Length: 174
Picture 1 (cartoon, rainbow, N blue to C red):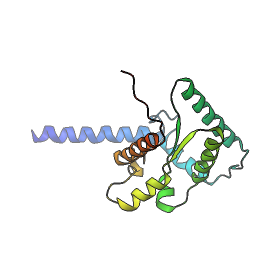
Picture 2: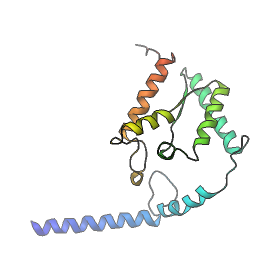
Picture 3: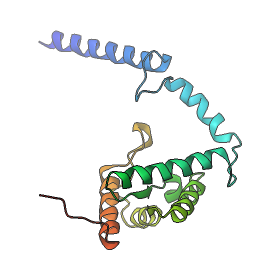
Picture 4: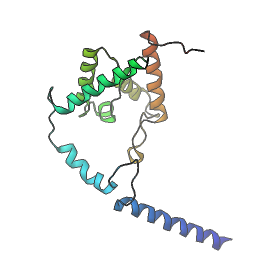
């Protein structure tokens, strides 16, 4: 029995090593990305240090504004009341500054200009992070860094309060 167990452990280790090799070589990817983790690791510093045009009329901002308007029009056409949700990244909450802060500010300005309701989670995230160090808002960076169950609940609670406080909550038909 012990020998069989040892054989299973060795087999498992071999499969794990093979899977890891497939990911690091780029033969296997996750999340539908068309590139390997190795490429992502090398590309990130280049992308983060490149100079981008962040001026008011820059292409990226025009595209974002158009997408926001499209989001609003589609929701209204379907009988929904759209709310633009701004989720700050961990750098804004933990360090007070991030390259994404400008995007949040820009999207709030666009939302105001086109009459789109907007909920910015920046302050609620900061407040929560100061009070609840034991329940993180995000999952660890090494496993994706997306919102944790706590972070999702925080967003859901604030979104519910926002739509109910602003008269956007409707009764569902029977």
